[in-house]
Amino acid sequence: MFCQNCGTHLAQSDRFCAECGAAVPSSSESAFGINQIPETAAEPHDTQAGHDSVEYQPEQPAGQSGTVPAFSDQVYQPSVYPETDLFPAPPVSSPVNPQLQTYTPQFAPVPPVKKNKTRTVIIISSICAAVLIIAAVFAVPAIINAGKSSKYENAVALMEQGEYEDAISVFADLPGYLDSEQLAEECRNILDYNAAKKLMDAGKFKEAKPAFEALGSYKDSKAKAVECQNALDYDSASSLLVSGDFEQALVIFKKLGSYKESDLLAAECENEIDYGAAVGLMDSGDYSGARSVFERLSELGFSDSSELYEECGNFIEYNKAVEEYNNGRYYSAYLIFSLLDDFKDSAGMAKNCIQDYPPTGETYRNGDFTGTQTTLTVETPKDDIRPTFLKVYTGDETHVASMFIRGGDALLITLPPGVYMVKAAYGSNWFGFDDMFGDDDAYYQTLILGDGYTYEFRANYDYTLTLRDANDGNVGTHNENRGSF
Image (cartoon, rainbow, N blue to C red; front, side, top):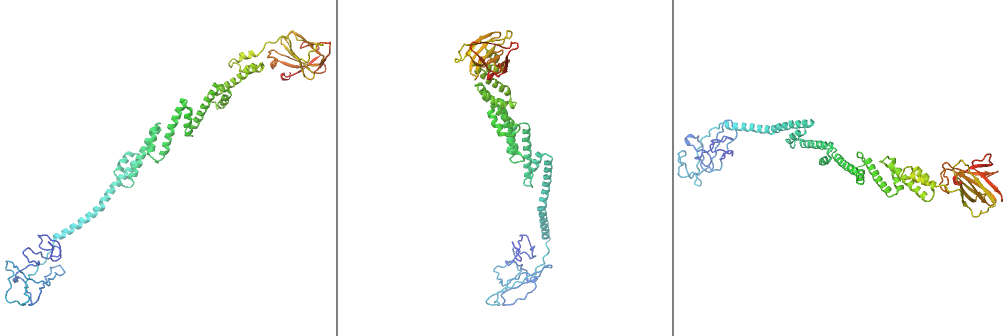
């Protein structure tokens, strides 16, 4: 139901409009919403016959201003009258206006409207509620934020104290608040990083590596993951080195570069590989190739390379001595075997190089000098057991004859007349006609016969040459070397 005056919504029990104070008609009142009261109670109103409208100005309630809307151009023609006699029916005599019969009702004055206390209370209550709502809108978030701020500060303090797990728990209650989620993630990263670092420090690189990789670019996690991998590779290469797989170990150590002692161990692998190759060469008899490798390794002090370097050299010399011996160059072989001392059978081979003395006699004669007109007798000291080897040359150094005289013996040879030069050598060890007495304890001389190195042997003359034992002899000597003897 609505107020006929201002349109305000009304309850069925309202008697007056709480907005404008107008009376609310009951169900027995006119359809126009105006109370019908008996004429006796109403103030007389002038009516004018022949007018087509009724105008009413109700009295304004005290304390209110405004005008109650006028009823205009309304013709009241009731077809049904109330059973009460408040409004007696108009006379039905001839109408004032034969064209239109108008009935003008008599109205009682509207009682003044009193202030509605309920309305005031409602308004005040509404205002208070609004204020409370507004206050709640601002106060509740402030209170909530104050609580979150306190939690946030507490979580940050825990984080600074290293209580990362507790901090994570508090940050978890602050989703979306400031940087709580980022700080919680930071705490988790710190915990994971520390756990990975602990594994790494304990040498558990296999477990630490994926932990660091999971941290991505956090701090130096990538570098730590690489370091873990390097440690794993280093351990693997070290195991390969110990097991003798030097080739594979070398590949890994070279890849590791300067990590720990990788460069040194890579060099060690190379040395081991070279050492093995050298031993293989040595076993195959290539002592020269092996020796060159061992020489480098011996300079580094690697293993027993120095000893093997020497051994390779001994093998090389031994083989050379054997070759010299087989070719009849006994003194050369003797020298090598003597230096090798106790290497293999060197000592025995050195003794084998010393040849038995040939019998006293002529050992060589040039076919162009077969004449017998002159004789030459050579005598050696009776108390000197060393044998003597002589060579006779012409003045132009053509080799005429050679002779070997054992100690204390004498030898006679024949020569055609001519100018000759005589060379004499003596010693203890005989190494054959090529090397003669060698260079140890031996003497090589050219005899000075008369005024020079040459002497004329005449036909039908006998000449005697006494060596190393003549008193006031007329033969001088000039030292020679074995190569020019």
